[in-house]
Image 1: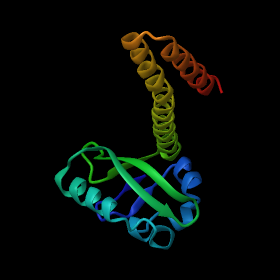
Image 2: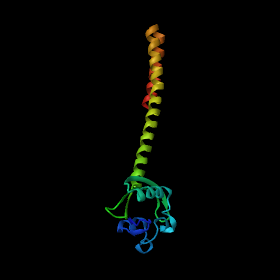
Image 3: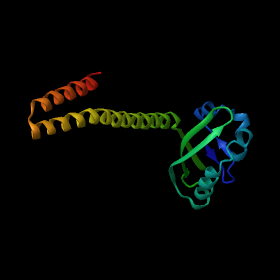
Image 4: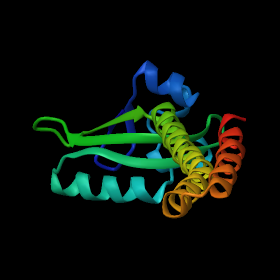
Length: 163
């Protein structure tokens, strides 16, 4: 999208119109904050444009999360810069919603894996502690009754591990 110094839409490409489900007739010449029932009146976008426009600065990958009326919540990376020797401002949008959802899904999966491994370690430690204790007692006493009792503990705890 290209904006005038007054932040009115000078032009936009077909990808913008398709992505945000708007038409050129309802976009070109309008103040960016008025587009689509004012759904572009986003505080972070205002901050971005107010910093870039007067100072001739460049902004890369400025993340904006916003719920749009027609397309729902989107995570976008915005890039902005003045066009060479011009008062016009080039504003680029990259929708990274699917990427962010995938990232969150991977983080959730990793968390569930860690929880599973912690549970598994706990379930293994309990029988192994009983086995280790029984073997230690048998080593110290060495009697037949202790050996029989140790064997019973080993069999019971091993069956827990096998289930």
